[in-house]
Image 1: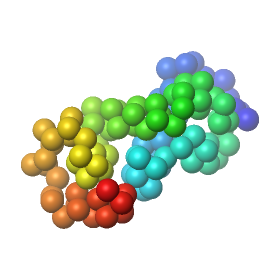
Image 2 (image 1 turned 45 degrees about the horizontal axis):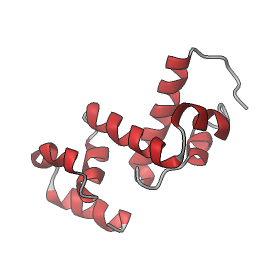
Image 3 (image 1 turned 180 degrees about the vertical axis):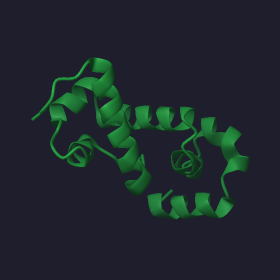
Image 4 (image 1 turned 135 degrees about the vertical axis):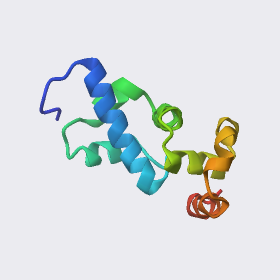
Length: 108
């Protein structure tokens, strides 16, 4: 259950930051709303995450988009491993062995 009222922009950022942290460890293509709830130690509910980010695919898309916008090299390496075209502009920033490691971890 949400423990503290927040403005929508603050709550969105809180959830997105938690989702990015989960993605950095488990892979953005594997995250789901319950992982975000767990990361936030119950400060939000599954329903609240859903209200802000919709279904799992929309949450993943938001994490990828935001990770790339913020230059998060872990998220970008995952995107490269999964063949996301938008990540191609970062190809020189990420060591090939890092991309290969993520490819193996994500089963891509």
